[in-house]
Each structure stands twice: as C-alpha cells, then as structure tokens.
Image (cartoon, rainbow, N blue to C red; front, side, top):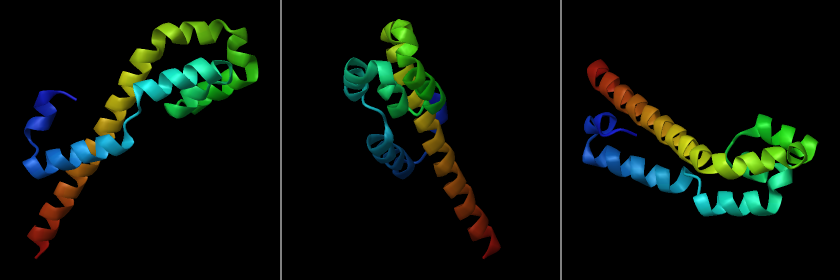
Length: 108
C-alpha cells in the first residue's frame, strides 16, 4: 500500500492494519514450499487464493509441468499481489468502520 493511502489513518488504525496483516498475509516461505512439494497440483495457487487456476493446474498436472515451471518466475509477483489485495481489503474494512462510527456519532 502506498504511503498516501496510509496517511489518513490514525495510529490506532495503523496498528489495527498491521495486526490484521500479520494474521492474514501470505508467507513467501510457505508459498515456495508449497510450490516445491505440490507444484503439479497447484497447492501454492490454492494457498494464494487463486482457486480457479489452481483447479486447472490440478486437473492438468501443472500443465504437464509447463505451467509449474512458469510459476517459478511468477511466484514472487503473485505473493506480492495477493498481500497487496489483502492489505487493501483490510484498509477498506477500517475505512468502513471509521465511516460507521462517524455516522453513529452524527445520529446521536
């Protein structure tokens, strides 16, 4: 997430963001281990939440190894993209909570 997106957050909200990221982010080490041991079955893609392509890999045995080899070069970007999506989802939830709190204060 960019610094600009984080600037509007209070220290409490930043702490909440960091706490949630620690719980939900995907580990590069785990992803690489899954790629190594379950590459033909798409285990690493299931872990990253890419269920559709994971099922395709499962049914084709990793595209007969071709897709598995390609993932060797794409995996770091996939991990980064997944963690950015998770962070943006958490940020949206924080902003939604902030908005709900603001609206409840206005209603009272």
